[in-house]
Amino acid sequence: MIELLKDERVDPSTFGSEALILACCNNHENVVKELLKDRRVDPTALNNESLVSAYYIGNFEILSELFFDKRTQNNMSKKDKNMFQIYMDELSNK
Image 1 (cartoon, helix red, strand yellow):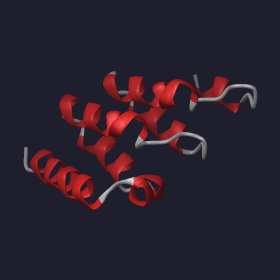
Image 2: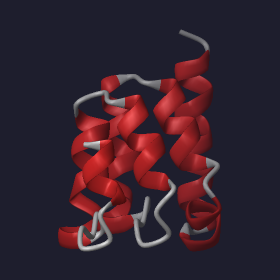
Image 3: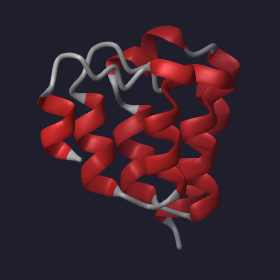
């Protein structure tokens, strides 16, 4: 997977950054980190689906990576930021 991402013909942002969403759904932390290195990937795509997925699987590390990514901070509404901060607090206390 990592080698595939190095190929410039591969666009991990297609279909609403679905690759990121699937990596989150399947608890693949390393893949999430690699995908976030690509500026084309949008962690807030499809109404924050990657963040919601990370929350539902209960992975604080992935949720943190996504939440503190500058693209998330720039694109997310204040209301959504507050909601995800609550989610992060909840997961960190488990």
